[in-house]
View 1 (cartoon, rainbow over the protein chains, first blue to last red):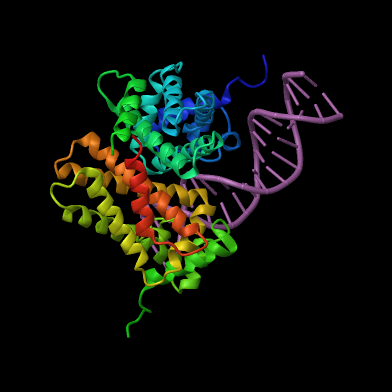
View 2: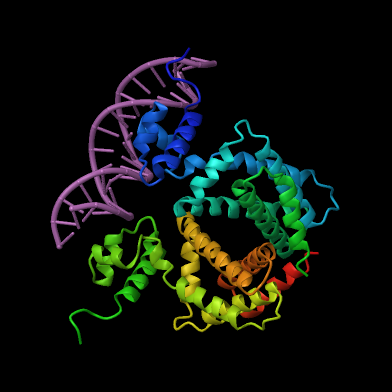
Length: 187
Length: 187
DNA sequence: GTCTATAGGGCGATAGAC
DNA sequence: GTCTATCGCCCTATAGAC
């Protein structure tokens, strides 16, 4: 048994989510989060670049899952199909989380705070850029790749939003597929 | 001739843009901007909610132009056509600015600073939501409206990005139209 | 206009794991 | 010994309160 309790990151994320829900994001100081997680303020900032990032540390893994799925897609799959495979992988990852209440609570906090929305949008845009690059690496035309990545990303966002706000439990993968189909039907 | 020099907002925006380019966004303090614009720090924060917002005060006018164009679109125009009309109006507004170098310099600063990108993405997302609402008000199905708004918004972003980074001068309206066509061709 | 709390970065010290 | 996580105290600028 070491000097420190394990999983400081996880504890900080949990503490932050709880405090951001109640009493609220603006009302919560980093010192509050650190205290609840049993670390110092300084430790918080070594793990997370700022007060918002604590809710987004999972996005790296999600991005990896997305890119892996795109790489695994059939070589002859058109850009939108490959991008959709990536979004499907993201949906699978989100639905198979240990704590199924996490995404919903997290989404509620983000929806209530513009400055957290900004960070979420940046993560999404970063992901879309990575997807576009992965598609061009597969040989797609850059413009077409960018459009496919944006369409798939937007479909995912709309689906995710419905999934986290719906009263009854929905299947995220189905929502994503439905959204992609709507973009395909734009013409 | 009044007690104050006129157009404090414009001077602050100009000063901020220049300083954000050189020595850079992070290196520039609000006090620096205020001093260059000949106002106090307090005045800056009365005009702009934070250090980022000084580059985004024009977005309100842009949004109004977009929504007006959507409202003016033929009643029987499908959602994507109406949304595209809104994006075209935005392109017109941007191309007919008094200082044609402004958008390019502004875009360069934003591209170099993630925290400014976040704000830009939030403005874009807010606009997309407003567009989606305007489309549903016209009688469109909410899901279809959201998809059309996202597609038009993404087309605009991709076009705007090319427009601000291209070596030779391009026609923003044409780029936007081309982008919308690409989304239409996704199926 | 003045005052103040908080975000967030820099740096050195410390204490464990290996 | 090295490497890495934690801590403590310095600081400034932001942004909100008074």
